[in-house]
Image 1 (tube, rainbow, N blue to C red):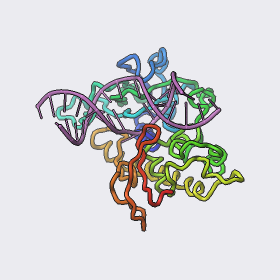
Image 2 (image 1 turned 30 degrees about the vertical axis):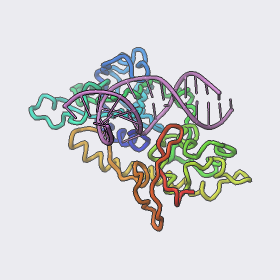
Image 3 (image 1 turned 120 degrees about the horizontal axis):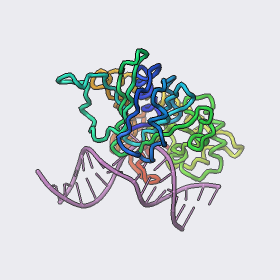
Length: 298
DNA sequence: CCGACTACCTGCCCGC
DNA sequence: TGCGGGCAGGTAGTCG
């Protein structure tokens, strides 16, 4: 699930329970996820106050009061939920997760408020364990190997048609793959790439370089693509936020908003682009499903 | 250097 | 009802 909008939704949902609170204990219930946990992570985090929750691309960042940052990537199946502080003791506790298999609860942040009393538990669940946690110093973040090569944020000032033209010129990879490459633009995943291409009427099979003119400037399609990316991400964050509020009340689980996508997972359905009589098709590119309309995406 | 493929892991859904 | 195959929102490593 987690692409940029989902991570942002998770960040917003966790902020009230973490920002300004102290990590009384960081419980690691296994030695690794995708990678081993950083050595001494629990010790380093214990007693630290969370200054702020942030996000870079699909990474959520937990800034601590000593200048360190705990960086979380949710992989394919990672999610967080908020419990407590003591609701699990209540009979018929509806806050207890009904949808998550607790065998896959791998990490728990035991939080405490300013008074030192337990305030909440932030639980990371990840069945496939493709997620991972890193521990870096804030001053090193931008030059850290894991983050230095990340492209611009879709919602940031650095993203422009001119920028993408410079990245895509002469590139022979399909635009679908180019947009999934986090070095070109950071935060998009399979769903939102499909959606942005559908909105901008660009075939996912088109080579990235074909969106750039001979003069090296953005072609018309590339000029459409940038606002399509910005809009679809902004709308997804908005939708995630609204659904998050509902879900937080239901069972405390964060980050699984449901959205009706225009192309993704709609194989065989009529294209909903006004005036288009196409049918959504599924193809495989680089081993991953692409959904698109062959009629209006050229 | 570039692009495609594979592996990592579990759960779920579908067809037989 | 059980079982095998395919597929899933991501990315790092390998291979040609």
